[in-house]
Length: 210
Figure 1 (spheres, rainbow, N blue to C red):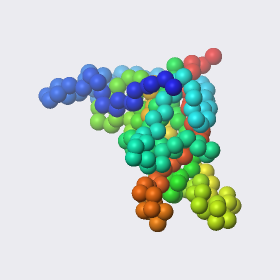
Figure 2 (cartoon, helix red, strand yellow):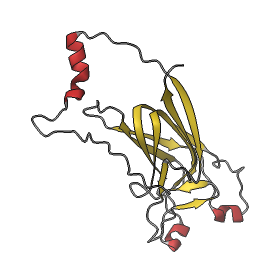
Figure 3 (cartoon, one colour):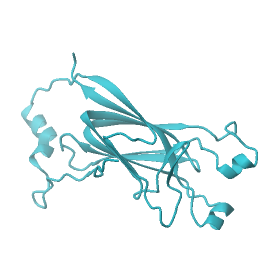
Figure 4 (cartoon, rainbow, N blue to C red):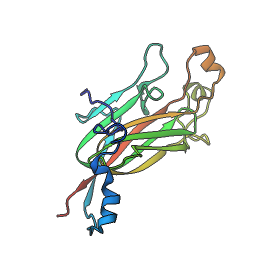
């Protein structure tokens, strides 16, 4: 699998005091003071759909720690990443990324999905592109529960999705997880089960109007 460095969400051109902000980061105040006319941005979108295990040339999957083993793995339901910041999925696109949707299920609901993005243009002086969706319902049942007679008809078994709308970005890193609620089995195994299993990632990219 191709290695892709994770997102850098601090402006690489950032200065130090007193010249902390870059010239581009004064865009809003400068345009307001000068009364600069603006034009609406119009474009069409195309959705790229990717499925686990994400063996694509523009994707890099880092499961995270495997020693000591904490449960990060590729399995039948998708990709379970180690808890942040150890596990991550990073991808790039040739066109600007303006939306990301993550579909999956938690080991111990509620789950969460967090994303980081590198903008096409660094114009956000105090807000790196970091977003998080919490409280995601739905779990894939632990195997011991299936052996005990439960199945996907169980009340909390199911999928969830997290939707993100982004400013134009060139790279995205995804991190996921779920509750650190410990059961007797976790104590016996000496590992937690606080993962989120990612099955599908849909990426919306910006294309010029035809």
